[in-house]
Length: 77
Image 1 (cartoon, rainbow, N blue to C red):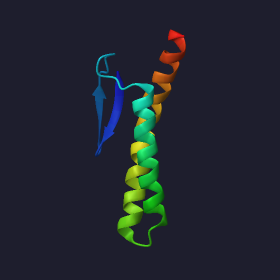
Image 2: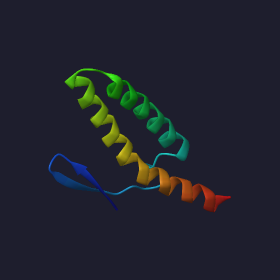
Image 3: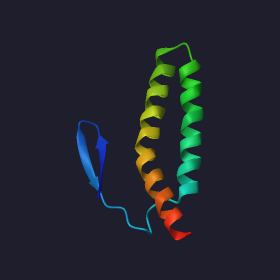
Image 4: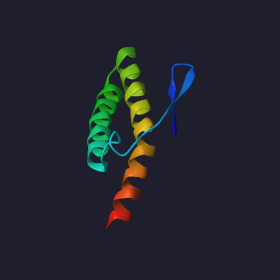
């Protein structure tokens, strides 16, 4: 069971192997979010800064599932 922050609350989420994303899918999402983070970071507006923070939060949420998928993939080898 994973706990995912949502607003001021924490949601408990059950991931099964069928619904879990692969290591590659997670990597691609992290890369896309990092590009959004860079774009927002380099912006000179408040909106850009907010976009950077939102992308950083998205990356943070994907790190643990990526680590879990990476370990699972290594165990299969």
